[in-house]
Image: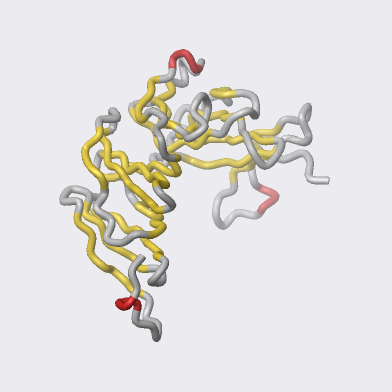
Length: 221
């Protein structure tokens, strides 16, 4: 059986037996842990689960070697930390929002009544959020296709991303301070194409296109 999950710190190049134990919970051997580190390497995020859906969220201050802090307990909802903003956690969650919303959580006051809502739940499912050039890029599914919106860090709507085709897009990853990011889009009439996107100008240009023996110009999605 898959039991007694543990979180270790491993330094590249060291032997595995030298790894340092970071977290375990012997009282709950069936719980599973997934560990991530924030982009600025200041915070360890531990997602705790007992099945395929729902998770608790714990964090550890890495700069000050702090104790493990319980931000959210229980497995009724899902949580994904997007980034830290001035010591607070920007979290994508379906807690109180089946179609997901974006909230800001202060670790010093993690109770849900203290959460600040940045992007509220809307008609369409909020699938992803990333930070680029001081802005939030929020990805939705709308009418069976990708739809991206750009917001300020405080949640003010700025504009839609001008996607070049109807299809499913993903990406917008990379350094959060960069003005340039990349995404790929796959449509019903063309294979995956990678686009270079300028956050400041809201313009996309083809970066790499799959070369196949097919002319999709005769088809319309």
